[in-house]
Image 1 (cartoon, rainbow, N blue to C red):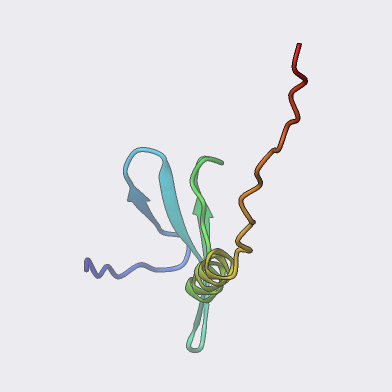
Image 2: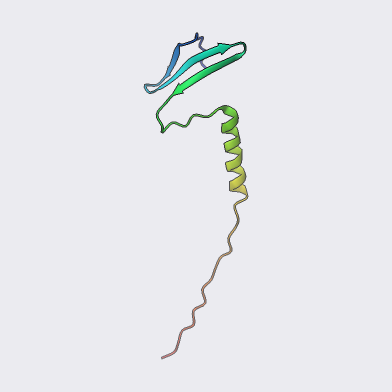
Amino acid sequence: MLILSRKTNEKIMIGDDISVSIIEIRGDQVRIGVDAPKSVKVFRQEVFDAIKAENKAAAQSAPVLPVLTINAKRESV
């Protein structure tokens, strides 16, 4: 893990197109801004963990559909 120190209004660049800005520091809370392309999903860790848990639960509880067989009557000619 890379650990950096930043002051208010300073940025950290990730690659060429993602920047993390320090917006405000108040006590033990830091407000940050993330500027990234729309194709990059950005979540808080607790939201990301909740999404993963929901996806896992949905995959495990997916209903199993019965196999259908088709019985066709054939006429003799």
